[in-house]
Length: 284
Length: 284
Image 1: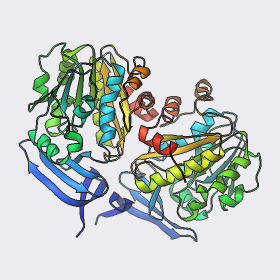
Image 2: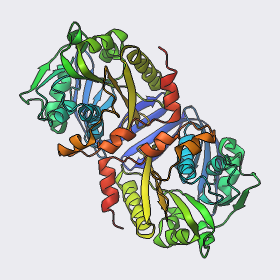
Image 3: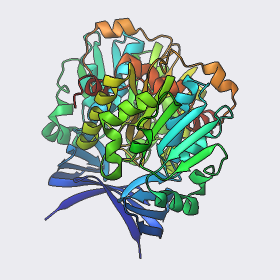
């Protein structure tokens, strides 16, 4: 028997991967969590039937969600990570000895449980002694915090289900307040290619640029996400991801990466004309 | 009834699009040519069951295969295009009034016929008076030519079937000889993500860099090709795509593009670390 997992990228586009074994399937009070073992992508974690992480290409996502901010400001010491239950974002952050404290707030303990059991490749550093894990709602967690974090990473799902509140103006404003003077906000900023993703990309960027003096987006190639063309947002009060990048300093750290490097750091901010147009004209 | 077209990206990965109508299906002595009308991507041309062109994202491919060379050397006058039967590459080239002559060599007249009938969006400029269309084997066409073209674009399928000879050392050497002193070779250089594509990517690059003093690769987001992460090769005798780029001059031309701009020109040459590694270490 052949087993295939199929994801609807739109109602008219499907992406399918051949499955060795359906390893895990459990429903929390928030969402459905599954783990598949696949031929092409290794272990794959899905939430509500959408691919979140695969062993084959998680390095791309986790390199780009962390190192761009860290290379822009190597003095980052206190970090808040929201979402990211698979642990990959924290794994990359713990490679910086200069980081002193990481609060990780994941609403759904089941994601962490499944990742620890089946995705040690991403979950391996969740027990680092600098990591404080909270199973809480990130939206509430950030409320009322002031001048506390040098970096906030919003490693969210799409804005449906529990991820929806992570795409609101109020939430971004609370992040702004929770950040220090040189603070940086990195957010999962969706994709320009399919209509629904593009709408969310524009909405998120519009809200962020109303709040932060510096608000840009950068792109990466993520083959297991719809269209493979995805963006992160980079927002800050003072630091510019290109002008403030210190390539020599980052390269002197000797952190080995498979996707990120200081050339692609700069290159990733060069967006296609149609994407620039969407982001510049965006309204909520 | 629902009609779906499914492409095997690897034997373990499938990409499917919902089809309104199967508009065209004919077999030439070279290959099977089909045209579909799809809900998400508009008209889609396939060759031997692989997507070549879609109305939704052909602009990405055709912007990146032409404008990078043209912005590096705006004095290009004589161009040879091999393959490219859908006409999109020629359409972009004809936007430069400075180009005097374009030889387009497509082995399979059926591709041009199907494109003219169903893809006027790409085939619209094949009757430009500067365009000379040859239905011949591009490999033979380039043999023995010397110092004739300022730009050769190899807009090929994958190296299987009639496209195979366009990935050989002999062919690239003949292109070198056919180019003028400032000549540039652009080639479809496959993709780093899936094993088979990555192998061909490395093989093509290795051969080209043995022949050309300058041999680089640049990437683009192509959602309807496997993984969405694809490369073109840029090779030349003298010109460097970054150092010799004259951004002001290209921008003064006022050519409106949806994907290409002079920022992404530079950014596209910044490759992920794993791709750089593959290209540097590549052997045939």
